Amino acid sequence: MDTSIWAIISLGFFLGIKHALDADHLVAVTTIVSRSKDWKQASKIGILWGIGHTAALLLLGIFVIAFQFQLPEKVALFLEFLVGIMLVYLGVNLIFKLRNRNFFHLHEHTHDGYRHIHPHIHTLEDINRTSGTVDNWHHDHSYRGRSLFIGLVHGFAGSAALMLVVLATINSSFWAVVYIAVFGIGSIGGMMLMSVLLSIPFVVAHKRLESWFNYVQIAAATLSIIFGAFLMIEIAFVQGLVL
Image 1: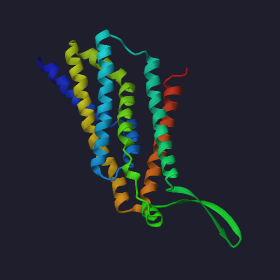
Image 2: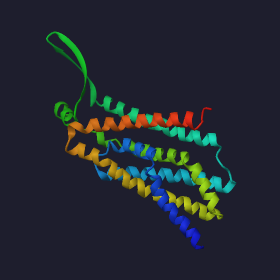
Image 3: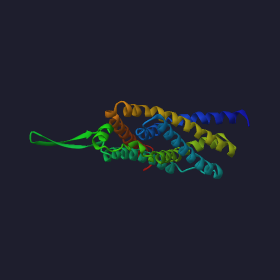
Image 4: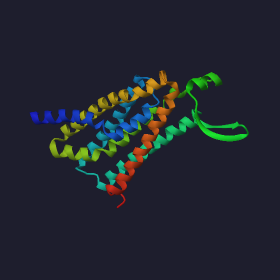
């Protein structure tokens, strides 16, 4: 194995870390870690995202390398469009979960004979104190499957360009697969670190600023919806998916 192959493999690791910093990746993971109560849970989210991402790259990568097949441009754009749909879904889903758990809801009041309705947010402490129920908000482990699925979607969506780079620089199919695996390991490490960093404001809000916890979550959900909608418009009309 010559020095150039080692250089390419090493580059794949650092490119994997950089790939984890893509805006759509960070927005998606931020929406999930907004429900994290500690950095350990956030790091698991990042690891699961990276595993899903790497699995998608390996599956499609082996297929591309084995059959010398390239995804049509429209198919690649459609996969990226799905990322936008997923981001919007994550944001909307988080808002509905907040609403259904009675964190964010509408209050009806009557003052001096005048009835009006206004939005209101209860904190976890308020709900537990008044209802006597156990807080199960953070015991929902569905984030695991969601993180893995999001990683899979991002892996398939971003794999077309990566395959072109691999096939253009590595003649050996074996080392091309190794490159993808190393790239995936880099993305796992990068996303694990970013998940921990992104979870900090949510963990702080949960532990010290309980009244702000839901506001921070709503901000994350709104960002996911806006970014997802922008991504869909960009891919559909600027990059030419529907043209």
